[in-house]
Length: 322
Image (cartoon, rainbow, N blue to C red; front, side):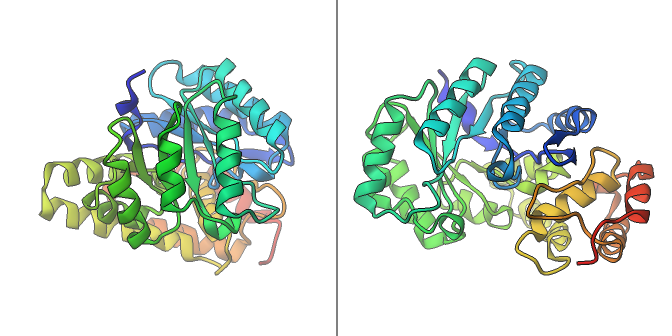
């Protein structure tokens, strides 16, 4: 396997829904083609942006199978298998392998707090039974525990552990992990928060998993290429665009605002429904109008054109008043 294929921009695909436990199949197909048209280097399904832990296992299986079938061999697909139950994580990995995914991604189990010794044992037990290469997913804000650098070093010694996705937002931590990853030529280090992609790559990161690439995939691909080329002026200009896009994630002030903002904007673009998995609900009419105004103010280069009949209909019947 050419492990370098995991480098670059790998968007964490949202999971389009039309109702509880009902996939927006047409929306998913449009979204996948939209993202691929932006030149991305892979896709990550069932991550945080994809609301993975909130979905039924049946729907998770359907999502993986549909995405992998549609993509074929165009780009690698990474599949989130994070779970509180070890057996379910393994089952999801088997589904991913059968569907044709390239790797799986696992954050620490997120209910019982574990210390580093217990977490290392968990990784050891998991990796020897996985049918696909494993990315560690560092997400301490949601999992209560981090993959500490010493654990990462030990994990990278295990056959099958091929990288780390870091969503801690801690650049000092990222830099320390980057130094470790540099000792393992087979390993990839990816940044989660999109606003930190440039800093991460300058610290030795190999790319990112930016949620905004659901909306503007080419923007993030161009930013990745500019950093790799050492084009500082182009990098600065594109980074300003990324920060401008980030205004969509600040509506409402909720912890769920990032996912809601992305889904709402995708609905405005006519790509897919913005129904949310419980415990979240789509934006209220007032908040949807804010998203529409923010998108209307974006330059043409953002390429977020509206096919907004769907958006208008949902705005008229917005289900919440958050």
